[in-house]
Length: 213
Image (cartoon, rainbow, N blue to C red):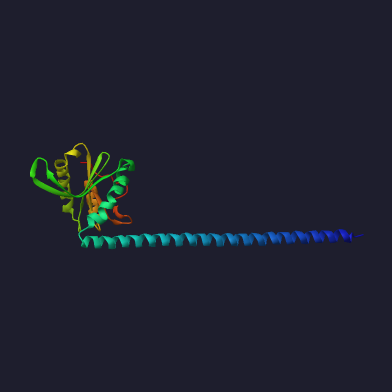
């Protein structure tokens, strides 16, 4: 004799198991779909933030370039763009501790201590710790300016006897520096500064170490 009650319970249990399996599968499908949407939304957000960051950086660079062009026309590029950036650059390139301070001279006119009839003006002279930075600013930079800077560096020891025991490094600042010129200057150990994200930025390749004179 068949046990109809038992068969009914078995069918009910099988139906419940089938429903449970179907529910789990549906839930799994929904979870995967939700995860896929979240991954797409996250990737989209990251890309939008990257684009926004790049656009903001470019706008900042364009603004600095416009400011540089205005300063250049007014003959104040050294004072308005270069000088405010020098101490920061010294700290970045030479790991010069901020607590040492940064002595800065702009448009410094000095009398030759060995011949007081001779005077010379230096665009920017900055010192930090054991180092002295000699910077010349040019509207249009050319390879010959690198050789001229070498002579200016030699003059610093003559016109600034207080720097006799310091290590001197050189830099040239301009609005825009051609990559080939930057490479040429790097081989000479000269730092090139040009308009960037932070007014003036170092254009030499990462890891560049300026020559010491």
